[in-house]
Length: 295
Image (cartoon, rainbow, N blue to C red):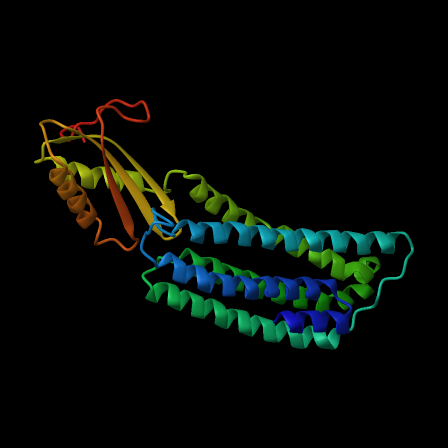
Protein backbone atom coordinates (compact mmCIF):
# COMPACT_ATOMS: atom_id res chain seq x y z
CA UNK A 1 0.00 0.00 0.00
CA UNK A 2 2.84 2.38 0.82
CA UNK A 3 4.69 1.60 -2.40
CA UNK A 4 1.46 1.90 -4.41
CA UNK A 5 0.72 5.30 -2.87
CA UNK A 6 4.16 6.66 -3.68
CA UNK A 7 4.01 5.28 -7.23
CA UNK A 8 0.49 6.59 -7.81
CA UNK A 9 1.52 10.01 -6.44
CA UNK A 10 4.46 10.10 -8.85
CA UNK A 11 2.32 9.11 -11.86
CA UNK A 12 -0.61 11.38 -11.01
CA UNK A 13 1.35 14.36 -9.53
CA UNK A 14 -0.91 14.19 -6.45
CA UNK A 15 0.36 15.11 -3.00
CA UNK A 16 -2.83 13.70 -1.48
CA UNK A 17 -1.91 10.20 -2.69
CA UNK A 18 1.63 10.66 -1.40
CA UNK A 19 0.28 11.47 2.07
CA UNK A 20 -2.02 8.46 1.88
CA UNK A 21 0.89 6.22 0.91
CA UNK A 22 3.09 7.52 3.72
CA UNK A 23 0.22 6.95 6.16
CA UNK A 24 0.07 3.33 4.99
CA UNK A 25 3.83 3.05 5.44
CA UNK A 26 3.51 4.17 9.06
CA UNK A 27 0.79 1.58 9.60
CA UNK A 28 3.02 -1.15 8.14
CA UNK A 29 5.99 -0.32 10.36
CA UNK A 30 3.72 0.07 13.38
CA UNK A 31 2.15 -3.36 12.79
CA UNK A 32 5.58 -5.02 12.94
CA UNK A 33 6.35 -3.25 16.22
CA UNK A 34 2.88 -4.06 17.55
CA UNK A 35 3.42 -7.79 16.96
CA UNK A 36 6.57 -7.74 19.09
CA UNK A 37 4.90 -5.69 21.82
CA UNK A 38 1.89 -8.02 21.89
CA UNK A 39 4.25 -10.92 22.64
CA UNK A 40 6.02 -8.92 25.34
CA UNK A 41 2.77 -7.88 27.04
CA UNK A 42 1.81 -11.55 27.45
CA UNK A 43 4.90 -12.24 29.58
CA UNK A 44 4.49 -12.48 33.36
CA UNK A 45 6.14 -9.94 35.62
CA UNK A 46 9.83 -10.57 36.26
CA UNK A 47 12.87 -8.88 37.81
CA UNK A 48 13.34 -6.72 34.75
CA UNK A 49 9.73 -5.47 34.78
CA UNK A 50 8.44 -6.22 38.30
CA UNK A 51 4.98 -4.77 37.56
CA UNK A 52 4.59 -6.49 34.19
CA UNK A 53 4.95 -5.38 30.58
CA UNK A 54 1.55 -3.71 30.19
CA UNK A 55 3.02 -0.21 29.91
CA UNK A 56 4.65 -1.15 26.59
CA UNK A 57 1.22 -1.28 24.99
CA UNK A 58 0.32 2.23 26.14
CA UNK A 59 3.75 3.53 25.09
CA UNK A 60 3.26 2.04 21.64
CA UNK A 61 -0.10 3.76 21.18
CA UNK A 62 1.41 7.04 22.43
CA UNK A 63 4.29 7.13 19.98
CA UNK A 64 2.24 5.71 17.12
CA UNK A 65 -0.28 8.52 17.46
CA UNK A 66 2.54 11.07 17.47
CA UNK A 67 3.98 9.65 14.24
CA UNK A 68 0.56 9.75 12.57
CA UNK A 69 0.09 13.34 13.70
CA UNK A 70 3.54 14.17 12.32
CA UNK A 71 2.61 12.73 8.90
CA UNK A 72 -0.52 14.88 8.83
CA UNK A 73 1.42 18.01 9.81
CA UNK A 74 3.92 17.24 7.04
CA UNK A 75 0.99 17.00 4.64
CA UNK A 76 -0.32 20.41 5.70
CA UNK A 77 3.07 22.03 5.12
CA UNK A 78 3.35 20.48 1.66
CA UNK A 79 -0.15 21.55 0.70
CA UNK A 80 0.47 25.07 1.95
CA UNK A 81 3.65 25.33 -0.09
CA UNK A 82 1.79 24.25 -3.26
CA UNK A 83 -0.95 26.83 -2.67
CA UNK A 84 1.61 29.58 -2.10
CA UNK A 85 3.42 28.59 -5.31
CA UNK A 86 0.16 28.84 -7.26
CA UNK A 87 -0.80 32.20 -5.72
CA UNK A 88 2.62 33.64 -6.52
CA UNK A 89 2.26 32.70 -10.17
CA UNK A 90 4.37 29.55 -10.15
CA UNK A 91 3.53 26.40 -12.09
CA UNK A 92 1.59 23.61 -10.40
CA UNK A 93 1.75 20.17 -12.11
CA UNK A 94 -1.54 19.07 -13.70
CA UNK A 95 -3.12 15.95 -12.27
CA UNK A 96 -3.24 12.65 -14.19
CA UNK A 97 -6.50 10.96 -13.20
CA UNK A 98 -6.02 7.35 -14.36
CA UNK A 99 -3.71 6.23 -11.53
CA UNK A 100 -5.91 8.02 -8.98
CA UNK A 101 -8.98 5.89 -9.75
CA UNK A 102 -7.10 2.57 -9.71
CA UNK A 103 -5.21 3.39 -6.52
CA UNK A 104 -8.20 4.69 -4.57
CA UNK A 105 -10.41 1.70 -5.39
CA UNK A 106 -7.72 -0.80 -4.43
CA UNK A 107 -6.85 0.95 -1.17
CA UNK A 108 -10.46 1.22 0.00
CA UNK A 109 -10.98 -2.54 -0.50
CA UNK A 110 -7.71 -3.45 1.24
CA UNK A 111 -8.35 -1.12 4.21
CA UNK A 112 -11.88 -2.43 4.66
CA UNK A 113 -10.56 -6.00 4.71
CA UNK A 114 -7.88 -5.08 7.25
CA UNK A 115 -10.38 -3.33 9.53
CA UNK A 116 -12.71 -6.35 9.44
CA UNK A 117 -9.79 -8.66 10.21
CA UNK A 118 -8.57 -6.54 13.12
CA UNK A 119 -12.09 -6.28 14.54
CA UNK A 120 -12.67 -10.03 14.33
CA UNK A 121 -9.35 -10.77 16.04
CA UNK A 122 -10.11 -8.18 18.72
CA UNK A 123 -13.47 -9.85 19.44
CA UNK A 124 -11.95 -13.35 19.43
CA UNK A 125 -9.32 -12.17 21.92
CA UNK A 126 -11.94 -11.05 24.43
CA UNK A 127 -12.10 -7.37 23.35
CA UNK A 128 -8.96 -6.64 25.38
CA UNK A 129 -6.20 -5.51 23.02
CA UNK A 130 -5.59 -1.78 22.71
CA UNK A 131 -3.16 -2.66 19.91
CA UNK A 132 -5.88 -4.20 17.75
CA UNK A 133 -8.21 -1.28 18.45
CA UNK A 134 -5.51 1.15 17.35
CA UNK A 135 -4.85 -0.87 14.19
CA UNK A 136 -8.58 -1.10 13.39
CA UNK A 137 -8.94 2.68 13.73
CA UNK A 138 -5.86 3.25 11.60
CA UNK A 139 -7.14 0.96 8.84
CA UNK A 140 -10.52 2.70 8.81
CA UNK A 141 -8.90 6.14 8.75
CA UNK A 142 -6.58 5.04 5.95
CA UNK A 143 -9.54 3.77 3.91
CA UNK A 144 -11.52 6.95 4.47
CA UNK A 145 -8.53 9.05 3.44
CA UNK A 146 -8.11 7.01 0.24
CA UNK A 147 -11.81 7.20 -0.61
CA UNK A 148 -12.08 10.90 0.18
CA UNK A 149 -8.94 11.84 -1.68
CA UNK A 150 -9.86 9.77 -4.73
CA UNK A 151 -13.45 11.02 -4.93
CA UNK A 152 -12.44 14.65 -4.50
CA UNK A 153 -9.59 14.50 -7.00
CA UNK A 154 -11.68 12.71 -9.63
CA UNK A 155 -14.52 15.17 -9.09
CA UNK A 156 -12.41 18.32 -9.23
CA UNK A 157 -12.65 18.70 -13.08
CA UNK A 158 -16.40 19.21 -12.63
CA UNK A 159 -15.56 22.61 -11.15
CA UNK A 160 -14.06 23.85 -14.41
CA UNK A 161 -17.46 25.00 -15.64
CA UNK A 162 -18.32 26.79 -12.40
CA UNK A 163 -17.17 29.93 -10.62
CA UNK A 164 -14.78 27.75 -8.62
CA UNK A 165 -12.69 26.92 -11.69
CA UNK A 166 -9.78 28.91 -10.25
CA UNK A 167 -9.22 26.40 -7.43
CA UNK A 168 -8.94 23.35 -9.71
CA UNK A 169 -5.13 23.64 -10.13
CA UNK A 170 -4.71 23.46 -6.33
CA UNK A 171 -7.64 21.11 -5.67
CA UNK A 172 -5.13 18.44 -4.63
CA UNK A 173 -3.61 20.71 -1.97
CA UNK A 174 -7.03 21.81 -0.71
CA UNK A 175 -8.11 18.17 -0.39
CA UNK A 176 -5.00 17.44 1.68
CA UNK A 177 -5.88 20.30 4.03
CA UNK A 178 -9.48 19.11 4.43
CA UNK A 179 -8.45 15.49 5.02
CA UNK A 180 -5.91 16.59 7.61
CA UNK A 181 -8.45 18.68 9.51
CA UNK A 182 -10.83 15.71 9.55
CA UNK A 183 -8.27 13.08 10.52
CA UNK A 184 -5.96 14.92 12.92
CA UNK A 185 -8.29 14.62 15.95
CA UNK A 186 -8.07 10.82 15.77
CA UNK A 187 -4.34 10.43 16.57
CA UNK A 188 -4.56 13.31 19.04
CA UNK A 189 -7.32 11.54 20.98
CA UNK A 190 -5.29 8.31 20.91
CA UNK A 191 -2.29 10.23 22.22
CA UNK A 192 -4.26 11.88 25.01
CA UNK A 193 -5.77 8.58 26.17
CA UNK A 194 -2.49 6.63 26.06
CA UNK A 195 -0.54 9.46 27.69
CA UNK A 196 -3.00 9.43 30.59
CA UNK A 197 -2.40 5.70 31.04
CA UNK A 198 1.38 6.07 30.99
CA UNK A 199 1.18 9.00 33.44
CA UNK A 200 -0.85 6.91 35.89
CA UNK A 201 -4.24 8.58 35.54
CA UNK A 202 -7.26 6.93 37.12
CA UNK A 203 -8.95 4.31 34.97
CA UNK A 204 -11.87 5.71 32.94
CA UNK A 205 -15.50 4.79 33.34
CA UNK A 206 -16.91 2.90 36.33
CA UNK A 207 -13.73 0.96 37.18
CA UNK A 208 -13.30 2.68 40.56
CA UNK A 209 -16.97 2.19 41.49
CA UNK A 210 -16.90 -1.49 40.51
CA UNK A 211 -13.73 -2.07 42.54
CA UNK A 212 -15.25 -0.42 45.62
CA UNK A 213 -18.45 -2.44 45.35
CA UNK A 214 -16.68 -5.76 45.05
CA UNK A 215 -14.26 -4.94 47.87
CA UNK A 216 -17.14 -3.93 50.16
CA UNK A 217 -18.88 -7.24 49.51
CA UNK A 218 -15.74 -9.21 50.37
CA UNK A 219 -14.85 -7.18 53.47
CA UNK A 220 -18.35 -7.23 54.97
CA UNK A 221 -17.62 -10.44 56.90
CA UNK A 222 -13.89 -9.96 57.33
CA UNK A 223 -11.94 -8.02 59.98
CA UNK A 224 -11.03 -5.17 57.64
CA UNK A 225 -12.30 -1.67 56.88
CA UNK A 226 -11.98 -0.37 53.34
CA UNK A 227 -9.96 2.86 53.52
CA UNK A 228 -9.76 3.69 49.82
CA UNK A 229 -9.33 2.27 46.32
CA UNK A 230 -7.14 3.34 43.39
CA UNK A 231 -7.58 1.88 39.89
CA UNK A 232 -5.38 2.62 36.88
CA UNK A 233 -5.28 1.18 33.38
CA UNK A 234 -2.30 0.26 31.21
CA UNK A 235 -3.13 -1.08 27.79
CA UNK A 236 -5.51 -3.98 28.21
CA UNK A 237 -4.88 -4.45 31.94
CA UNK A 238 -6.18 -2.77 35.07
CA UNK A 239 -4.21 -2.35 38.30
CA UNK A 240 -6.33 -2.02 41.45
CA UNK A 241 -4.85 -1.08 44.83
CA UNK A 242 -7.05 -1.62 47.90
CA UNK A 243 -6.12 0.34 51.02
CA UNK A 244 -7.47 -1.51 54.07
CA UNK A 245 -7.33 -1.10 57.83
CA UNK A 246 -7.51 -4.31 59.93
CA UNK A 247 -9.94 -4.12 62.85
CA UNK A 248 -8.01 -6.81 64.75
CA UNK A 249 -4.49 -8.24 64.62
CA UNK A 250 -3.85 -10.17 61.40
CA UNK A 251 -0.84 -11.89 59.88
CA UNK A 252 0.59 -12.00 56.39
CA UNK A 253 -1.30 -15.16 55.47
CA UNK A 254 -4.64 -13.41 56.06
CA UNK A 255 -3.57 -10.49 53.87
CA UNK A 256 -2.53 -12.95 51.15
CA UNK A 257 -5.89 -14.70 51.42
CA UNK A 258 -7.69 -11.37 51.08
CA UNK A 259 -5.62 -10.50 48.01
CA UNK A 260 -6.48 -13.86 46.48
CA UNK A 261 -10.19 -13.39 47.21
CA UNK A 262 -10.15 -9.94 45.63
CA UNK A 263 -8.37 -11.30 42.55
CA UNK A 264 -10.92 -14.12 42.28
CA UNK A 265 -13.81 -11.62 42.44
CA UNK A 266 -12.53 -9.99 39.24
CA UNK A 267 -11.82 -13.22 37.36
CA UNK A 268 -15.17 -13.12 35.55
CA UNK A 269 -14.59 -9.82 33.78
CA UNK A 270 -13.06 -9.49 30.32
CA UNK A 271 -9.97 -7.38 31.02
CA UNK A 272 -7.10 -8.68 33.19
CA UNK A 273 -6.98 -7.09 36.65
CA UNK A 274 -3.90 -7.06 38.86
CA UNK A 275 -4.55 -6.70 42.59
CA UNK A 276 -2.50 -5.27 45.43
CA UNK A 277 -3.48 -4.76 49.06
CA UNK A 278 -1.96 -2.02 51.21
CA UNK A 279 -2.51 -1.99 54.98
CA UNK A 280 -2.95 1.56 56.26
CA UNK A 281 -4.99 3.58 58.73
CA UNK A 282 -5.58 6.59 56.49
CA UNK A 283 -6.28 7.27 52.85
CA UNK A 284 -3.28 8.33 50.76
CA UNK A 285 -5.58 10.81 49.02
CA UNK A 286 -6.66 12.69 52.15
CA UNK A 287 -10.19 11.31 52.22
CA UNK A 288 -12.01 9.97 55.23
CA UNK A 289 -11.89 6.24 55.93
CA UNK A 290 -14.74 4.28 54.30
CA UNK A 291 -15.66 1.32 56.46
CA UNK A 292 -17.01 -1.85 54.96
CA UNK A 293 -20.42 -1.12 56.46
CA UNK A 294 -20.51 2.39 54.95
CA UNK A 295 -19.48 1.13 51.52
